[in-house]
Length: 614
Image (tube, rainbow, N blue to C red):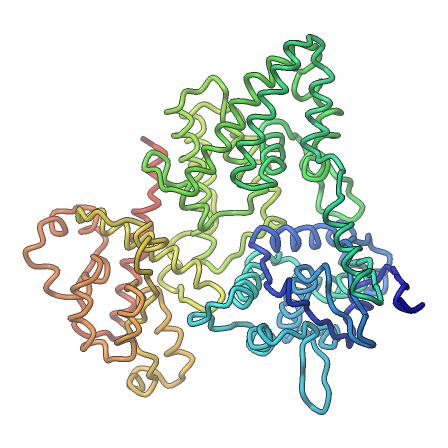
């Protein structure tokens, strides 16, 4: 190697230094962007929480430079070709940073104070923009997100494009509302100036790959779970008992890892937060981390500091019996919760639903475990879990139809207080407390009549329509349910607009195209149809499509007059009669309004408060 090829450089850089007017080439062996929802949610929550610890509205923006920094980890580049940085390790993070920058740039478009971040997203040469991530596969989706804030991925099957689009939507779902107003330029200043990455540059591919292997193959640090295990076993003096707990621990953690390699971390965080945490950090500058945050970062240390006062674990036998009984009970039910999230269990269906539309796992899992007691039998546990999960779904659906977000940072105090209030509660008391929480919600289902779909809430609309369609099918005695529409094993279902996207057909009712688009996307103008069926006649006139709808699911069939004849299961259903369904041979704006009113009534039936009174 020449002298320059032997060289390795490392420097700490903020986002601005790393990305400004730069180009990064992605190596062929790691082209796919594979971050999942949990990864992007954790990143956004960590970043926004760290910022909010320092933020004071009265500060000048210059004071942001003194805010707490956030370390995002190392990235490795090869500069074997002069002037061209090839990403060896860190592509997932840089792609995610780019997505967040695009989201922030779109968010500030109508803001009075803007931060210049365009040159962190793309560079321009000879009048043409090219993104900092120079991979042809992702240019189309990045361009669409940057220019329009949305991308139509319905016909795209490329893994990277799909994931980029979905992670952008996740950012929109989780980004805190309190940072979208006056605090936004402060946060952007902080993000590009106080988030630190260690940039490692090698000038030969050989050295770059050696660094990559060293970072990824030789990590022998003990995990928090392993450190907790070591401490627990050290407190059990009897050799035979210590060996017994060790075998139990190994067996349970191995089983947990069959779900996810980091599932053990999530379990201990959920268990300790749900059952033992008594404090949470205040939302003010300089506030110290409390139980909730300490469990999230170093739960093994938190346990060592608190097992006597919060767990009442003092003697060797205390540790032995606690981990033989409580630990086994909680970890077994944590895995059963996971099972019920994967496959619908009619004994506890809402666990399945909230895995598709729930709150952040950092709150959700703790809430589910909080009420469980190792003396509860299986039937009681399932009822408790379903009651809590139903509350979570009721909360998220109500918020969503009112266009309200529920990012972890904005609801953490509310839900932490709920966690404490239901901790160890018996079933009847649990139901009473959850009903109190539901009745105190400021958002109701009445706004469903004004609710419409847009690009960023399509996932929720699919969930809502799947719940509604499955519910109506069940009421008329059909075997189909939520799963049949949300995650069928065969032909998939898509959202169907009852009106084709033809503004000129509706000028008798609308002067402005925007008004037409709003009504076309109203929840009263949407149904679910099998993929392909909706595409084959989606632009047809409603009256021509109506005869097709009579062949589909019961919710679609309620549009057709024939459905109301000789259909005893429907006609004899008191629940559906109270909804106020009526046929619509023609579909005007008033018909859509009536249909939306029926959806509102369905919501009150599906998430009826009477559930908690039985």
